[in-house]
Image (cartoon, rainbow, N blue to C red; front, side):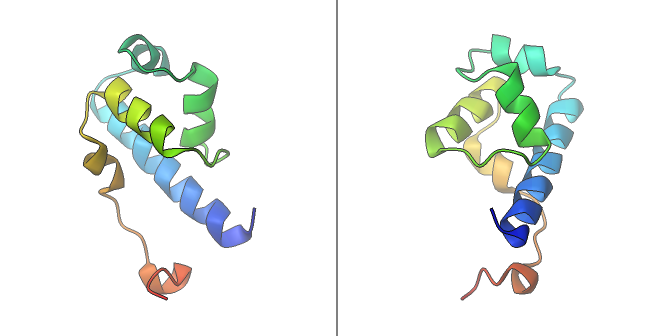
Length: 85
């Protein structure tokens, strides 16, 4: 994976961890909330170590008891990552 993608995944993972902690949930809670992902997968996502599928994203939202769109509500420097191209 290239450096920019790694940085984006890390930024996303930090946001997911922040959402989980704000909700008072542990990684085990996310799994128990009906999520089809494992604690290891959640840890990898939060640490920016895993690029994942859309269905995993939906499972993560379910485990966090949040609408999927809230997972994307974080700041990202578009120019730095050249997302607008």
